[in-house]
Amino acid sequence: MLLCVAAFALAGMAQTTAEEVLGVARRANDYFMQRYEDPTVPTNWKRIRPSSLWTRAVYYEGLMALQAIDPQQRYVDYALKWANFHQWTPRNGVNTCDADDQCCGQTYVELLPFAGKPDSELLKNVRENLDHQMVTPNPKNQSLYGWWTWIDAIQMAMPLYMQMYRLTGEAKYRDHAMKMYNWSRNTLAGGLFNVKEGLWWRDADYVPPYKEPDGQNCYWSRGNGWVYAALVRCMNELSPKEKAYKQLKKDFLLMSEALLKCQREDGFWNPSLTSTNYAMKETSGTALFLYGMAWGIQKGFLKADTYRPACDRAWTAMVRDAVHPDGFLGWMQGTGKDPAAGQPLSYTRIPDFEDYGTGCFLLGATEYCKLLK
Image 1 (cartoon, rainbow, N blue to C red):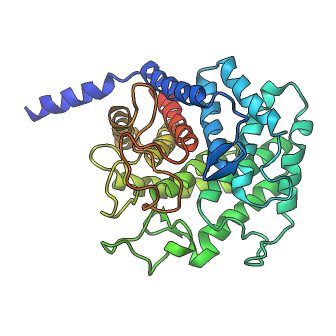
Image 2 (cartoon, one colour):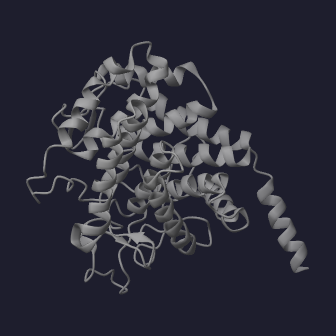
Image 3 (cartoon, rainbow, N blue to C red):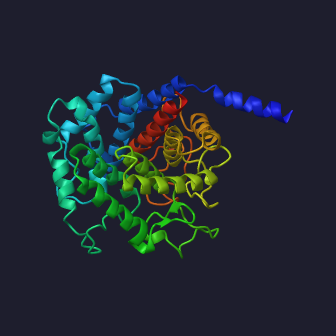
């Protein structure tokens, strides 16, 4: 009887097809594009911010991932209107050293094949910005490499450095990015990556002796999701033979093993990965973990027998409990820096920003779709 039940459960999982996943991704994206019809309009949550801010930039990462498996001119037009409006420039100009300001550059790079202008012309300001950062120490810590003081920054900026390395062939971009990564990983507050547990503290405020109320370490779900996604996006720009690739792959495998242990029975991950504090469904972290695991299986880095069920559970959970009929995404944690941010979460609560959550969801959905294909 148990074998029959197991077989029935597996059959139920197998019913999900790539086309069905793509349909859900389209629905979520259509909701967003209809709600935010003009991509040039600034955001207005407590204060006005240009639409090149990091939250919107993450959405475009997801949109370009969707475009790659579901080519539609309307996706390209929407993204190009945004990039042209912002003059293919980092938020706050070429002298910013804030990773959040640089995140938009990742999509600028991905839009190059559709822009009809020379790459050197379109990316002039992005390249100037990175060149500026590489010779500018952070005045707060006097380190040339000490800019990524919060782990979100690794996703916001590190893939852009690797994209620039691939485009130009200049190893200085790859090498500087790895030095900044290792400064955050190994030096800041004694190192933000807990190698023994395979998870990251969000910033210096959360390393021990900081503890959750139940005595566990505080590992923020989406923060770890940012790093996990960044490792994937960086490795996509590198050769597997490179030293940088091998280091990032090693960290990816450590994180994968740790994250697998943290998954809830219902398929989601908690906002606080190893703690009972804020034990609830959370969509953005779940989507990013799905993104990384589905990618790792396809690369042969993660065993399908072990990680494919985790991917199936994550996708099933999000579709069942988070995706509304109109494409709105529930159980999405708002902006912040720890599990307490944006609480309480719910199926119907609208987060302060909807864009980055949609981007995370599209990254996870598209990579899962590729896995099913």
